[in-house]
Image (tube, rainbow over the protein chains, first blue to last red):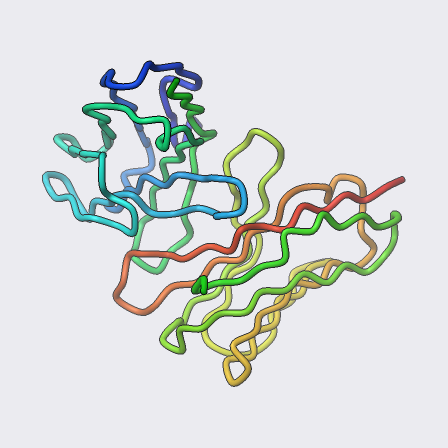
Length: 112
Length: 111
């Protein structure tokens, strides 16, 4: 049972480069989320989706875009990476809005 | 001021000790309170889930919510080395998808 899978697990970018993080879940969850985790800051919500074809902004959306073309996938894009986007990114999914979040193992991004 | 405050520790205790982890919050609209456990270089996993005020017990773990004081706690009895991890408190409002997390407390249980 894979749960929530994130790719890639590690990536190093140069300032200004673009990239996409992919999240896939096999639990048929409606809700999907992208968080970033920074030391001393905890997890902060970037964007989320309440269903296929829908997305919404979270607490820290600037510099990121997302898409949910298929129910099982949620993509996070960085169009022009900045050093401030160096972080560990976690994707999560849930069955309901008040339900348990199931997290992936994280994607470590370094922007030089 | 952060909406959710959590002492980052680190906290080191001997095996068998009782551990107390705490969070305070400022938004009285929070209704759902959770504790997640995160092992090094892994994603968080749900440990305890509580709705509104009260206590909830699950094995060696007890979660307490005091909404009047805006204070939540997690107690671990008979702590084990396998409990060594970072513990994150989390909370959210009804009909809102933005769960707010504390910064996490790193716990080490020494054999």
